Length: 139
Image 1 (cartoon, one colour):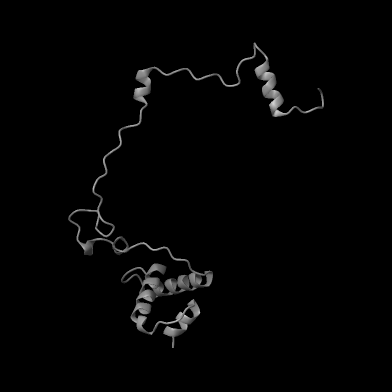
Image 2 (cartoon, rainbow, N blue to C red):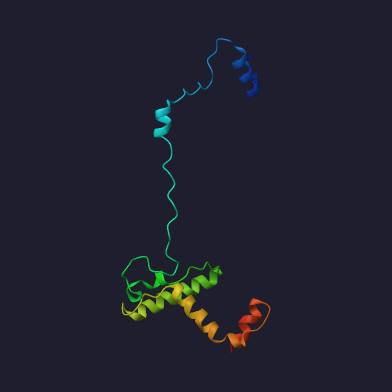
């Protein structure tokens, strides 16, 4: 069959049809019972009482000793590229102004301030779209 390609099925048929041909993958020898027991997975641990999400993880540490980011809840947020760029610009500017004094300002810091501002104006918030909601709380 020079110049002619064989299908994979033809190759398998020719291998299994030859009585003296070795198997493609030799069978795995059976493991002795003691070896199988040695490779058994360790027993599962019983569930333990985990601290709540808001509790500090180290005993004896007061809330003031726990970093602020560990006292906060995680929330995923999707922002537009222009919002991210502007937040980064404001963050850099504020961090330059503070000159190393006080807390490091992050984009998350600015978002929390914005949320606090929105919550303080919640009574005037109305609308059914993002644009309407924004206009309801801006002058």
